[in-house]
Length: 320
Image 1: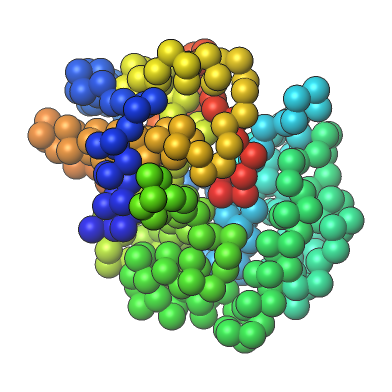
Image 2: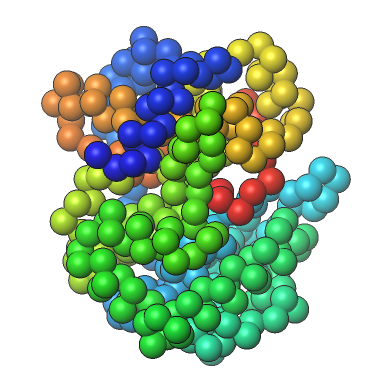
């Protein structure tokens, strides 16, 4: 079992502020089947894809700085223009990096990343407003570039190949070597692993390469959901995640939840287990989906207005 699923189960069993409503979960699972919802296809419009080494590097860069897209209180939301669209959040990041590559900025070269100054990153991302934690993003990319140069001759695809077609091995390589991927916390004295961005990199490789080449993983089924702030927003909207009254007030008022606090860990752990239980319920109903595929479905639902009725929790963190 993925250690994320194993350790977050302990949180689910001891949670005080967040619980999973099993009837709502069964009802939602049935609705997914009745509505004929399918796995969203990989979005090639906003993502760079050349079918080769550069795509692997692009995805690693993207998922290294894939976190915290909401604005500080009173600040303007970060948005970018891409072709004829105004994008925000994750797709704005994906498109900004794609646009940089298409215009000749060598962001996939490890030596370039290692020396990338903050001002240049601001220029690459551009747009209106500014992402939170932009300095942390620059540091993470510098760290990534230096690591690839030292260990893998500057090649992201060599890192992926070193995992031997194992999703769990690749997650382990990222977590072991790059501190920014060590997404975990202590909960009642026990270590909990969440690994949102490390796991999503594996899933993105699988999606972009359609399960072939660098997206071919023999244990892709072992990935869990990627615990962020959008999935719990959707799961709460459909009644699966239930918050205590005090937690509801905090989230609905926009109060910050401290990174690594019991409340925040309970939201993320129960998100992971909600998706796993949806998978199990769907299987009982004759529908086979993997946790990361259910994650993709939920995340896409979360882009629709109706699923934004209840606010998401706010935690300032580089993990998601």
